[in-house]
Length: 393
Image (cartoon, rainbow, N blue to C red):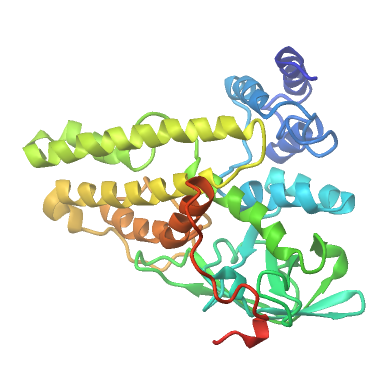
């Protein structure tokens, strides 16, 4: 098994052969991937060396000390956190070789074509159809709330391939080329003024069967890998103390004593403690990933993330009083990533409202925690054994 010392040696060899100060950023990242130092727990030849996930920190520390460039993980978070684990688990060797390197390096951005109008919380009710024609699948349908679709080259897509079986069993998982004919991306303008999300229309889009992940009809099982990793990616982000939303409001409290009241002080103390507990719990969750795949615990972390963001941003606006009602710019933008802390309190307050919807609604995640973590009885489901085509819509 690869040791920490071996990884340090491999990292120093990379830095000697490709000095960060004089090497093109993409060239350095490609060399890092080829050296097995991208994600060390992945297999050799796919950006890793089959080492324990915990040893990634050894590599990252060496590279950070050398001021080496990173792959801008916030910009390519869907690819890193959702597409890559799914491709690794269910993809063919050809698919792994084709997609993982440009995904990790950041040459190709990914998006997620899952949610639909009428199939968000009840994702398995999706209507987008995939009909096989020889070696291709013809896709027709609509997806919605798609982050990064306007900059993405590839998408992970689930579509219905068999309407004659219950809804969870008639779904297949594909990789869709967002540049193919028939793919239309339209912006969805949000309350923040931005169009960070998109709706995507698929009209006679032809996807080769070679870009199918998993078996035909097994798409729901494949999608669970994506969804579990998505919740961990959202709720399990690594943050320093006072990282995230709690940072700006704590800074305001320290720098603006004239805004303080006893009531606001008590609320800030409560939320600061809760944010720290969530941060430490998130760290424990990441440590659990060292020994296996993410489980339903990610749903609990995502729930905490959404609630805390909304409560903290509300306190932030209230602390600032009239200043908190100001908004810097309503200009229509199509950003590549979400910046929760880089703008003013009004933006954080408005944007945090989406936290209880994206990545799984609060209501659905509460059910997951109740059933899969606490072991409570499942909700009655009358549509479990009914063919999708016979469901009331």
